[in-house]
Image (cartoon, rainbow, N blue to C red; front, side):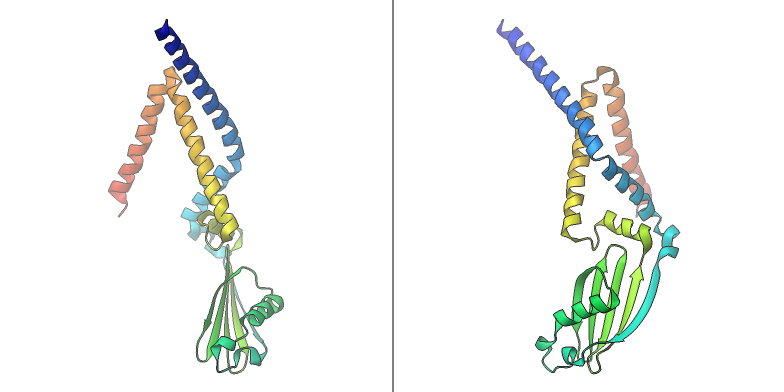
Length: 207
């Protein structure tokens, strides 16, 4: 009697695990559909970035800012905030400030964003500056988002959540195949084949 109860409990547990795994797999797949599609497509564009090199556009602009902001003997008194805000407003610069470097004769200010960079070189004696802008186009933006480069903390969270969702989808799919007797052996066999093929490509051709 006790053995029968134990068997029933095991069957109920197995059934519950299968149902929960199926539910999670279906709905997590729907939630992460766009995410998986995005990283799949951008994986291709990233791997063949040379096909889209023509989309990169570089422009140069010149201007002059308030000399008193940068022409000071004490570099601690250089008006960094005023310089950055002036450049953003005057030249419509986007992206996050990534570097503000000060030399004896020059200040260099860099801004970075997905598929975007702006580098400004300021003559401390005169306040004259030269701005170099690089825009990589839509594909460049998507590629940088794929890599999480210059995308900010919020997008870093998106990547982390995406990784967790895709991991859960994969694991629940593996659990489900274990509960389908007719497909279990063939499913696991193909999983092992995929793993071995990936390893062989790495071992034979990746230097």
